[in-house]
Image (cartoon, rainbow, N blue to C red; front, side, top):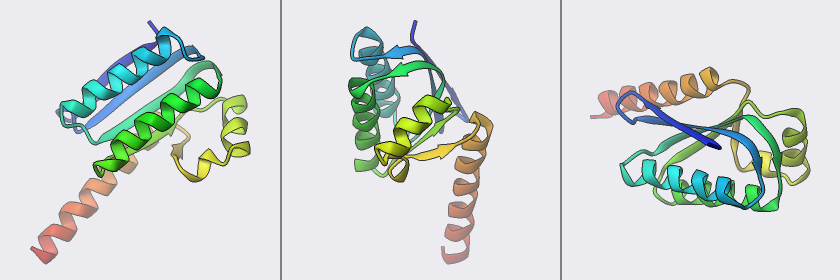
Length: 128
């Protein structure tokens, strides 16, 4: 199994933990299906944990961009976390770090989503 799916706060934040090489085969299809399932259930905050990814080619990157696009078109947000050095270098070279929100740890990504929610709730309360 290349993808481990979980959610917290009643599906408010979904987490997909990827493992192995993402090169356009079954693993990539499994990832896109898991992300689509969360999205169709109403999730709009997705964390993709890349800590277990050993290799990522253009097809793997394409699947990440595809999921990012699906979420962002509907006002959703995607954060990446735990990138290995090689994958991080690839994201810098391809300038994908300017598109994706990248956090060091999963906990940091969760905390950022929770802070964004608190700021939105505070703004609504003040202007509501």
